[in-house]
Each structure stands twice: as structure tokens, then as C-alpha cells.
Length: 125
Image (cartoon, rainbow, N blue to C red; front, side, top):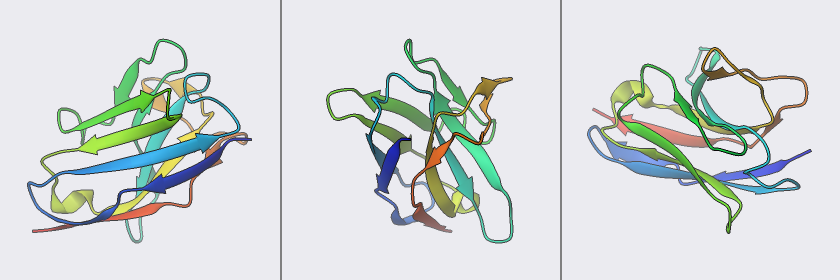
């Protein structure tokens, strides 16, 4: 199982930027599919972005395309989510995930998927 620790959340004004980090241990981030999900109050946990193992193909939810970028740093064994042009509707707890299949250009949580503890992102309008 992969252990994941997120950081980088906080309060930002609309139009601003944040970078989330997800430090992994137990597996290298380039050897498994890695992804970000988010959950707003009263809503389900939704897919945000993913990066495939090996070649690092990236995938994004339509709501964040062109604004968010997922990338990884093998030397630090960390996956990042760069979030630009933030909107109030991006407010949520963001979770890092490892080892979920990517199907239909989204990452699907599976029984073997590991999760981080979550980090709060609040965008004020």
C-alpha cells in the first residue's frame, strides 16, 4: 500500500493560485497511476486530475482543464497539483490517490486505491 501525505491547501482569493503536494512512500510515483480528487460539503468525491504510471499521460476533469496542472517529481517522490485561476466552486477538500485504474480519461477509485488525509482549499469570491 502507498502512504500519501498532502500539503499546500489554504485560503485564496478568486483568481489566485495554489500548489498542492502529495508526498508518497511505499511505491514510486512513476510506477503507479496517481490522481487528485475533491469533495465539497454535501457532495460526492469527484475526480480532478490524474497522471499515468510510466509515460505520465495526464487527464483532467472538464471543470479544471486549462487551469489545473498535475505533475510529478521522481527525485522527491511527490505529485503536485498546480491550481491557477481559482474559482469559488473549486472550494473543497482535496485528496491525493494512488493505484486507481484510468478508464475513459478519468481515474476510478478501486479497492486497492490508497488515499491521503485531505487538504482544505477555500476560494473566496
